[in-house]
Image (cartoon, rainbow, N blue to C red; front, side):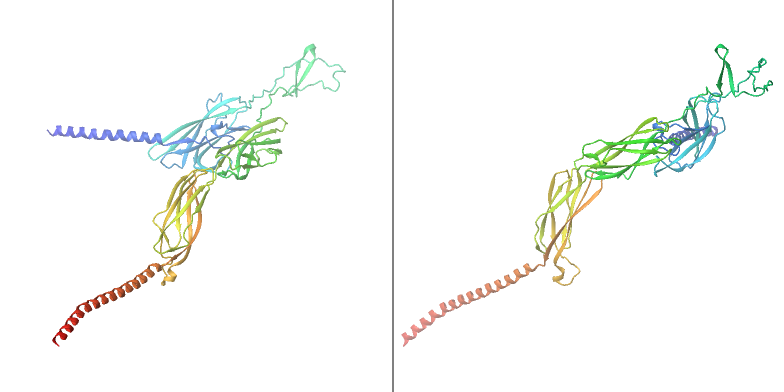
Amino acid sequence: MKRTIRKVLCLLLLLLLFPMQTRGAVESETTAQNEKLRLDNENRYEGMEKAYQDGYEPEVSGESVSVILPLMWNGKNEVDTITASLDQGDQNTAPFIFQNYQKTFKKTEEKINDTDQTREVFLIKFVLKLKSDRKNGAYPVQIKTTVQLEEQEIEQNFTVYVQINDEKVAEITPTTTPTITPEPTPSVASGISEETDSSIVPEAEITGGSGGEAVVAAKGENKEEKATSEPKVIVAGCKEIPEHIYAGDSVDLKVVLKNTNKKKYVQNMTVTVGCEGDGISLGNTANTQYYEKLGAGKTLEVPVEIQTDKKTEAGRYKLTLELSYDNPDAVTLTSSGQIKITIKQKSELSMEIGQIPEEVNAGDRLQIPVQLMNVGRGMVYNARCTVDVPGLQTDKSLFLGNIEGGTAVSGELDAFAGVVNAEEETTEKRYGRTGGRILLTYEDEDGNSYEETSDIVLTIQPLKIEEKNTDKNEKESNKIGRQFLIGVTAVVGLGIVGVVLPGWIRRRKQGQFYE
């Protein structure tokens, strides 16, 4: 019985542990998938003529080539260093001198696209030595990376192609075959020694020509000329360009041109500037500018003035530059580039305040008419009006919402007149002349906020009118009371006369009768 219980308990323990182990493996695999290095293919770094998305090629200089690989870490875990090594391919066909390449690279802040803007990357860079007898072609170089996390090691491979265009063949020293030289005649051998040192390598090869003539070929005459790259001028950026150019504005820009070749200058360069779009023009007197020379690896700033019309529609436009220049051998080359600019319509609201009383009494309610007019061409959003006047109080602001260009909306602000200076003790100082503003706030399509104000002035009087009415009512009440008392007195008097007078007459008559 005890053995059976033990077996059951062991089986239950195994069933509990197995899912936990499986789940741990799955979580580890998921983490490995999410944590990885990513190539920054959009930006250029120091030593790169192009970004990877534009066809980056490692730069061949002399007898070496520089391979650059910008990597970014994409994961939740913090990584400060990575290890990278090289696989240079087949030793027999590759143009590289094989060595052991393995380095540890730290995360650094690097400038991008020849600007002051930086990005945090692992900038992998190897300089490979080239063979003297290399051949033209594209050769893959595999960069193997390793990232060490707390619980796992992540390996990734990246391939970069090295383009060789300066093929070189190993030089072979020519060998000489012993020949029997006939005894020279005095006329031929004049000034030439009869004894010849066979160990001396001749400066020129002598090959047999037609008719037995000797043809002399200069040493190295058939050697293939080394190919070199031509200078290329690119549009590297633009200075002093605002984030938005508002329709109707005129702005001065400085377009930066760069000679990417580090060895050759360019000369006789013309720059032709153009811009598409209605209502956009160039303020320069001529759209073509001339520059005599641009040195190797140097930059040049081309001034461009852009003028826009108020009717220019909002949107993105292209500023194009067509370049024509000569290399040092006077061969004409061309290139082009673009600068993108953004035109926006100004958001402009005009506010008008309607007629309001110059004087009100404390406790009065007054309506302040407000009209908003969108005098621009762009939409404005969330237009709202509020009152900021000592002595005037409002329950809520006036919200007029979104207003299209060239339209108007109106409404009324409901205000309550109260105390102007609550801290004063006397009635004369607590009320009186006051002034302030109606505040208008609104936004443009990018969420930028704007404010407009309109001033108002009025006088708030204390409750004097109600006190005068009370005095008047009291006087009228006293007058009515006196009139009522006189009337009652008259009625009572007449009653007394009506009762007493007949009795007196009757007694008078009776007295006469008795007499």
